[in-house]
Length: 305
Image (cartoon, rainbow, N blue to C red; front, side):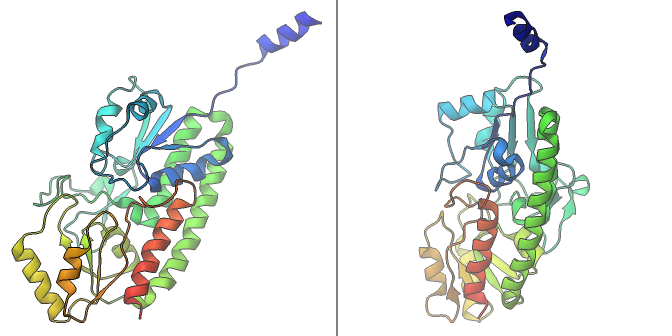
């Protein structure tokens, strides 16, 4: 009897393991978590409250990147601190850089509206003030990109773990439907804010504005790491004094003092602090919806009246 049991055990093929997945920022972790469902919990590298541009990996996190079955990240344009750790991974190790993924709708910082498919995007633009080039990496703020990424994440997980492919695909489809429903809700929430000139702390909301038809008339700072010059601030102040700006929004990672100085003595309002990467949110599958809802509600509260 013992022999039969042993024979059955050795004859049974080993089940494929669910890949250990590492992600860079909250919206990416949330999308992967939705696709994985109960099969696994993707690790998020960016700590709560940390700045995504100058974060430093702990040794344990670098080790997790090296050993991960799959790394899903925006790309070096947003999280360059992850690029060196990616170099420690074995040759052929699975990774998915979402900005480079086929079907991702990209836009440049200089674009006034819309965007272009990745296959047609021009990577040769140059614009001063952006330390990661002219291509805007905040592509998760377009719900259409998030829906496309769900399918790509499911496909990659299915390739690595074919036995659970059906679950990954079903979870991705359900998550895409959820984003479509959220899109409709946010469209209604933001409707009163359309056509009202808004100014943000830095130029991170182009995807969000283009998707929902908002008028982001400018930003205090050109890039994530650039400091606005006196001429830029004077021009922006003149626009505000002239009544051409309805709301200015500080940002959660930056001191609001500069925004307060620009608005002082004018009729413009200061909105709540925006959080484009969701750094204040708890990781989990609900973080993507919470991120977009938080942005929309904050904008609507200031400009919707």
